[in-house]
Image (cartoon, rainbow, N blue to C red; front, side, top):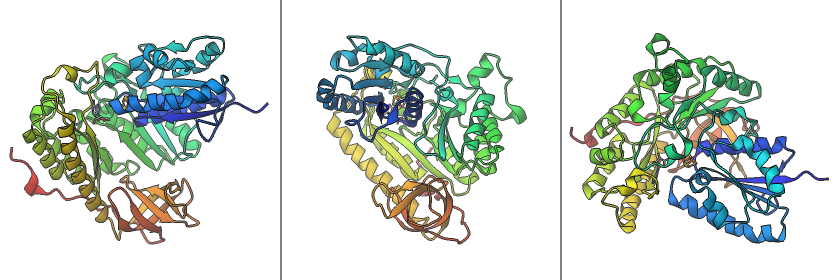
Length: 470
Ligand code: 5AD
Ligand code: SF4
């Protein structure tokens, strides 16, 4: 008999990409094999996101598309897991009663048992639990690409950002033991992985809960934070070429992490530092405890300490109570930080978060006008940052064939710039190759593999004139 096949659709963040790889690993240990698309698959798993409302709409849209297939082929299994499942719980099974299994953010390991239960159940099997002791990394994985791996260093979040649903879905912060992280990374490297991305909702508060519970002594050796300590330990893993991490919180950022990024060859010159808003008044309403000046000081320190560093960010437009003046401050801080890339979002109302009860919710049309202005500005900054790299030779880690042009391969620089190069015998998936960067757009560069020596990435100067007055 042919093996049953599966297809996973992932919404949302890198945490979810990581969970999906684990879900694939779990399904493969059950004997399932990958299918090319949802139509062909015997089992379709939706790994959902709850962070913004449009993720809800997308899921329910995709579920409706699947309904006729499920009705003609009752053997087809439909599984919904992850953040939106955790948030909506029984509601998913009510709105889409043709699903077989609904599970949350803490019980992926239970998937085989839930699928077996569903085999003999007339109604959807729904299991949502509030907390777990297990890290998803402890489950088997089927990685999308052979040379890269996500590694979770903590799960959950202890912050109280008023816009964010995550703490209520992923629970309080829980750090993974350093020894377990190192052991996983060593075995990944032995398996051919050369790049890891460390994942946590708030990576630079890593280990605080371990100290609180007395599991490790504080502070770390040499007075370093435990996160810097972890970077140093990973920097000593032979064969690990690139270390990335996401996301740090500006309020917890410490100089030892900048020093680690400068001193550890494997740690990439890329920093993702979420701004959220450039207005102190809005930051206060968001319960983000840093202020715009502190944020810009961090940006200056990063650019001053780590040669060539690229800085990306997340910004929310239209938070309740945001005035024109608040928004102009976001525009000013954006220009002053000269972000190398940015993810910009329109504020999305998430029932269950504190922001829902704030006054001053804005008209969507006003939010959209502001959003388009900010997005245009960040696109311009990204294009300028990429243009500064033209003519330099930088190391690419080749990811695979370009998604838009079969004649090219795509890779990333250490600064996380996407580069498409013409096919070349050396440009194989997983290879590290020098490429000369020749043309720039806002979201990618074009280049060619070369045997010329590597240049340093070109850093972004701070436009001092734009820094708002203190
Ligand atoms: N509305 C819009 N954007 C949000 N984010 C988180 N919650 C919301 C929300 N309610 C954004 C933040 C965060 C990123 C992952 O998603 O910018 O950093
Ligand atoms: Fe990731 Fe947050 Fe979306 Fe969950 S709600 S998938 S943690 S972005």
